[in-house]
Each structure stands twice: as structure tokens, then as C-alpha cells.
Length: 321
Image (tube, rainbow, N blue to C red; front, side):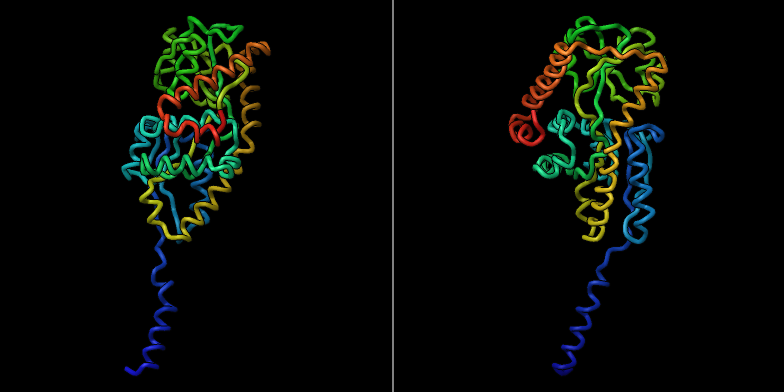
């Protein structure tokens, strides 16, 4: 084989190589921590439908189940271990692995700002290092939690109240003087009915998905925190994607995060529905409302500091607090 012929063959091979190494279509296994027809699964369903419709030959997502097939508090560990590639869940459910996720709920900064100020990069790195997870997208942004109760309150003193709580606001409820109790979502209706709890913390939307409006009399205003539901992915699965596949998913992430701009309207619509169902809004006085919100931030960030003293200052710098 003469040198000229070798050059021609080599050149042809180099020309063909990019086509030879193109990845085949990949199907990612996904799970959701929320019921298929609930509010907090809507964005995820839209994301999956759009990815699958436009990603033929590149990326497809197969949703293998929801809480009926995998308990919500096991979802994070399943993503970490690679049992599933992707999950629609909340950092609150895997705070045992990544306690820093609480800052994602404490912040009042939108995701667009966190992507610019380094907050997203920091939280993503913490997830990669601690839990082998990539923080792909925030699917809920701009929604507040509220205290819903069957006993009327008129101040930021909730002494004597038993409230269903989760780790992200357990410290806050204690600061209000309430007794937080851990009750599975599927058991809250019965707990309210039997007086095991006097109320619960829940976002501005979603109580109708669970039927809790039937056992709820009041919603306290103002709200607190910023409800966080996110899309997480196993880091190994993410790294196996080629550049085109990652770019494609990032494009879809930008699209789905843009939908969060409608969260405030969703909350107002749900509050009107709650009023029609007989749920009365209790508006605390300006002084008590200020105390209520101050306590929420103080208690929340104190919990982060106790759980993650090495990162708390960085988190405060970008997420606020």
C-alpha cells in the first residue's frame, strides 16, 4: 500500500468516524414520587411527552411507575443506585442523603437567578458528590406552603396544635409552638377525621388531589417557603449520554422551567376553589405575619446549619437566608 493510498483511506475513515460513533437512541427509565393525576406530576408529564415526541432516534423516557410502585422516600436512593435513571421528586424526600436540599425550599430566588448566581451549580455538585445524582430541572417554582388547620389561630403562636409535618418545615412548626407529627400523605385524611392532627403543612395547590378539603376549615396567610419539586438523574446515566443527547435534554429543561411562570396563577385559582369549598383564609396581622415569616427563615436555616455546617455559608450566599 503506497503512502498516497494510505492517506486516502485514513482520510475517508476520519470522515466516517463521527457517524460510526453516534449513539443509538437511548431510553431512560423514570419514576415519579407523585400520583399520576396530581398537580405535582403535571410538569413532569409535559416534559416526558415533549421529550418523547421530539426526541425519536435520540432520547426517550419510559415512566415505570409512581408512588404505588415505589415509596416516595425510596426514590432518591433508587436514583443514586441506578435502579432508575430519572425521577420526578423533591429534595425533601432524600434530605437524609443530601441535607443541603432544604435550601432549595428555603430560597425565594427563582431558578433563573440560581442558575446565574452559582446556586444551581453548587447544589448540583453537592448532589453529584454525595448521592451520585444530577439536578436537572426545577419543576415547581414560585409556590408557597401554607398551614391548613381545623382550629382558628390569630397569631404566630401555634401552641397546642398538632400539625402533620415533613423535615423541611418541622423546625419551623416547633418554633411556632406546634407539635409536628410525621404522617404519610395517604393517612392524613383519617388523621384529620380522628383528631390525631389539627392540621398540616401543604403547598397552595394540591389538597383537592388528595381530598383533604373535606376535613379542612382554615388556611393561614401568609404562606412560607418555596415548594421544590425537581427532576433528578443518575449521574452515571447522565455521563453515558453523548453531547447531542445532553444538549437535547438541556433544551427541554429550559422549556419546562419556563412553565413555572404560571405558578402564581395556579395558586390563586386553587385558593378560589378552596374558598368555594368552605375553607376560610385566616390573614394574620402585619406584625404577626412578619413574625411568622421571620421564624420560618430562622428555623429553616438553623436546621441547614446543624445538618451541613460546611456548606451553610455558601448556600446562604446564593440561595439567600
